[in-house]
Length: 422
Image (cartoon, rainbow, N blue to C red; front, top):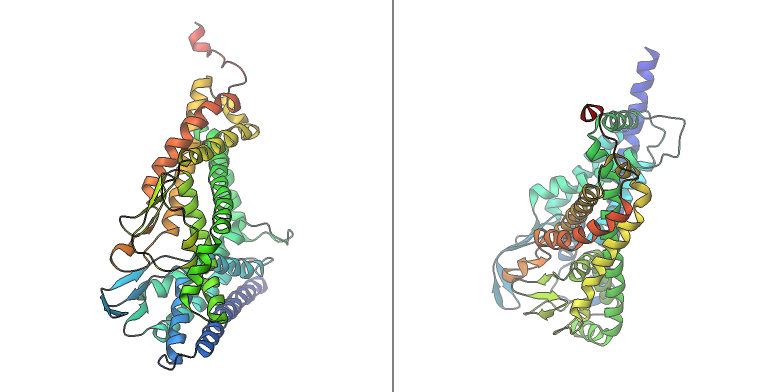
């Protein structure tokens, strides 16, 4: 009886910790955005814009930072009739901040006997805050999509907690939480009963494929920094064209930083040769850039314009990354070298596995980073995930196949089964 009462008390405490921390984080992010919006409203000092519009704008930005689409109704923009559209491009920089806050809450649950009450408390509070904020952020013409607003913010926040609690490194090694114990038991059982083919390939293919994608992102970040540095004049002119105050310029810069991870992913697609689009019918690739009318966002001044005579040279980046990742994964390919019978079968299996992992991860990143930013042609902004998956697979798999003859070559010929000796 005492044990049952102790468990119930522990669950209530865990639920309370998760709920209170989620309330604190959601309130903190709203207050920060509202403070920034109010500062811009005061300093810009446009008498035709009431403060409530600043509140609604920051509320919509809060939802956009959680991956919620913002619906813009049919209206006249700058004297031009605009059809209704959804802003579905999620600023991954803000989503990363939400994810980190979720990890913070998850770390406060270390030492609990069970995690699920904390997850439940955080979900209820975060979903309640989002539901309450939805009508406040809504206007007759601009509002968050209702079903997404009620679910996605809480799901994103709690997903961060779940991943951290289940796969993170606990700071309290004396307490084995039931969810962690269940997960460890499931992994142990699956590893014992897993097919030898998948068990041999999964780890090296995942490590090498992920290394290729991470390498593309790292090189893309470097290229982006270099491009913005060399095109600083164009970036500065676009800033000047916005005609905003210092606080307004800071707000624009912060908004661009929120979209920086998206741009890095687009740059990774550019390195594969596929490129990305800023509106339907436009192309930004190593082989040339074709742009129609685009928004006056300063970082667009760093885009490569015109034909690039060295366009083919960037295709060496994914090739070298695939080669290096496959060669360096050799220490993790011991099971392949032991279980496979011939170098050809081992190389084909590992090469295709690495190509498949890299393609799927690249497609997932492209899907998350892309979306619509305006009406009509601007409803397509980013990378086609299926095309990127195909291009990455075609570039990575053949190179990994050739390199796998080194990293996955069987240690020795497989023994002849006894029934074949007779």
